Length: 213
Length: 196
Image 1 (cartoon, rainbow over the protein chains, first blue to last red):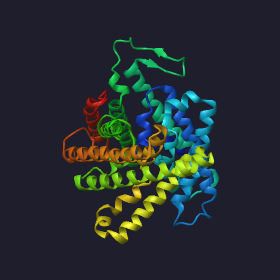
Image 2 (cartoon, rainbow over the protein chains, first blue to last red):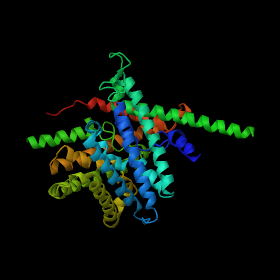
Image 3 (cartoon, chains in turn cyan, orange):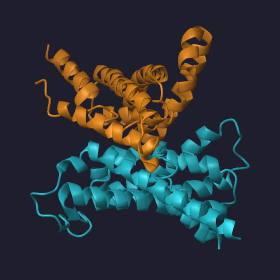
Image 4 (cartoon, rainbow over the protein chains, first blue to last red):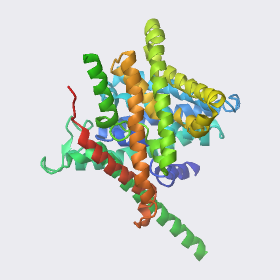
């Protein structure tokens, strides 16, 4: 099944954040609580699916020369919709993500997928690509959030499981540093190193399999 | 006098305490992408200062005289990104005709700047902080200076990282991120630094 392969690519071998190294601004800036991470991940996933579908449907109409501008307008339209919806229904999330919601417009993941995938494939394939890449992005964000929240404030699920989350480490142990900007760089660096290691392992295993054949 | 002092405060915080890259996480993509050599980093930095100043002025004016007058503030994101894209295109054409020498130096960085989140970020933050026109332009210029400072400092660190011996998985990008983290740590020393 093709979906399974695409899901694996989105989550691991071609993860937008951890392998393609796209959209790092938001990944490092907002991953301080689980609530932020899930909210941002879902918003980007929805926008990614919508913009992929529209761009793929319009791919034969948009002239090649102004395609980037056209893509940006489509993306900006969806971002504005999500921004207004969040302001109306989830104001807490809108406040804590702040300027990073409108900045989804220039998130390289969305423009990158439009250029690399949606402009060359059919509507259905583009929607599936949006979903799997979005899931990969959300997974990377959630992973960052869980690590940073645990080490930085000693809790799990702040904002999702009650306002303060579940306390795991006693209050005197967590290192505040991890939820400050520094922690964002360090955590992402280590996670990318881990992904590279896992991917290399997977590639080596496949080579071994083929050698046996 | 107090107006001057507030401009000074905005500048200092934009360059150091609230550095766009290392504290606010805006513009990480070019920061990572174009920081392999010091001279390209400097070129990118100068182009960003230029565009951020122009973009601050243009988006402030568009917002004040068009969007607010017509009650269309909710269109900010769409309009701003279009203004920035058009502006970058225009600057590119203007430089090519008028100042070919400068164009040679900055030209290749200009198209990349449209999708630099520091530029859209500065436009949105100007409105969010309800800055006046002068304050917005100063914030744009000094935000760009902060960007340049960070990217130039980082590029000289990175030149040395190239040939260091470290675990295979960390080579290249992850190590660069960790170095950037340490740079961010040193910029934390400026936080809580107030002029008033």
